[in-house]
Image (cartoon, rainbow, N blue to C red; front, side, top):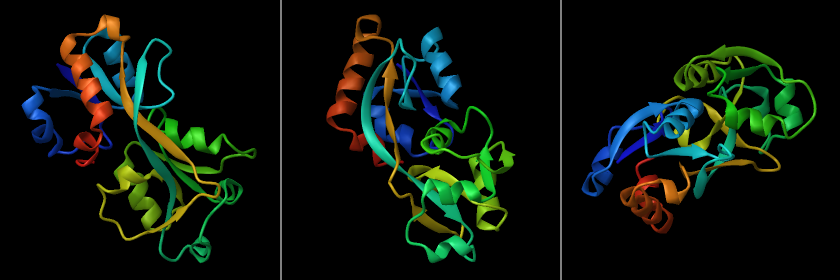
Length: 196
């Protein structure tokens, strides 16, 4: 069975944790690449955040908090929590289109123009620029576990999250192995999540 995973939370240790299940991590890509790979049959299923393509079955696994990241000396570090209105007033550093779905979904929850200052092609660059004071960014908590930057983090008020899960074609169109894998993950999501 072949699976797809976001490149921004892929890590070298994950394949070892599910090797006994005969699963291969075939594709690491962005949301649209994994969606297209499921639709084309290149992968049997993939890890995505909701909402997913209307033809997919989606099994939620984890609610990943969306947080605001900034440099240690940013004026907003004086606050314990930040509203979207406060965030939108600041220069934002964003990932490029198709890597920003979760962030845009959060920002769209409030009115007001987004003040995007930089759009970068990878999460590492976004986090580095935020840590060095070029602006602020909103990122899912799981992404930050892969970075070793010195920055400040604040929750949003009200809190927002992305729901991570496994997406596939409907169960009547997938293999028995894929059905078993999805059922296993829905019952034991920590097997996947402990590696994130």
